[in-house]
Length: 384
Image 1 (cartoon, rainbow, N blue to C red):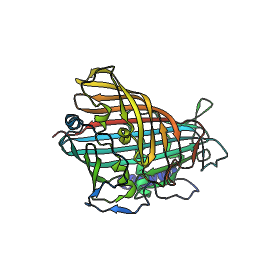
Image 2 (image 1 turned 180 degrees about the vertical axis):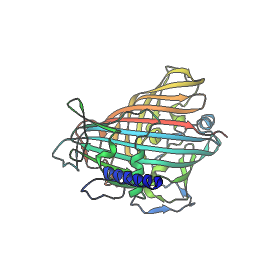
Image 3 (image 1 turned 135 degrees about the horizontal axis):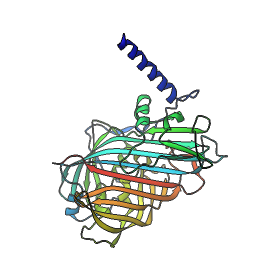
Image 4 (image 1 turned 45 degrees about the horizontal axis):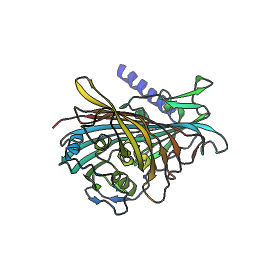
């Protein structure tokens, strides 16, 4: 009798949860998300060479020791990146004649297992565990709850989308799903986000759950991709081909540099800091200064600061125009003991321009330069 009663209570709670989370009186939109509608061009196990029309690769590192240090053979690195954009805008969902507020957040979590690294050629097995984005368009000012590098907010939304949209896709959700992770403000006070004043769109990237073996050669960039137990679309291929792979070797090229030293970093080195859903290749130049060295929890660190320069994020195929121009500023924490960037917090102002027709930011016209916040976190989860 007790078990039956408990079971009935659980069923009622589940029904209540669905009613609260699901949008009322609104047809579920299951349009395909970024690259979700593309025809696969590579089957599982098929090796895909670098196409002749691929963008120019990142610069040559030219230091086998640096390449071996930042991606150590046999180790697995877990990387979490987030990107947030907030600004007044004119959005298609509300009609372009009125100004509303937009808050956008994208998250990605992946694991990178370094199978081979001889200081010139790197073979990495990359597993995209999570990749999703949410856009909140509201009549009141909205912001996501601030998070530190390594923190994810969209887990519950992703679980809801996984239950309704497969293969990558976008969907309209009820504002109730963002209570607690996104806050509305009006006249300096917290404001309730509801169906009348707020619209929420979420998308799962088609790369979520996929494993790809990436072969990188210094000076040539990514030269080969091999999907493992999955297929790849053309957009997914182009995005992965643009990966800098040895990012940390570009951000801190010389371990013998001293606090106060400065150097320029090619914008392509920031490719793995950006959400995969942007499907863009960064270009430009950012100046970095080694601020100071310090110790923390028995490990040695170098604090790096992005203090000048800008990057543009360009579409990787001819059918789309530039997505963004950014001026990243902020700190990167390099773990000298372990040999990799451990965390980064970057703020930027910029311009957001036209994206592909199925992108969450498409037909959002920003009234002012949006505020952009990028975070990055990396940890080694095993040792050889």
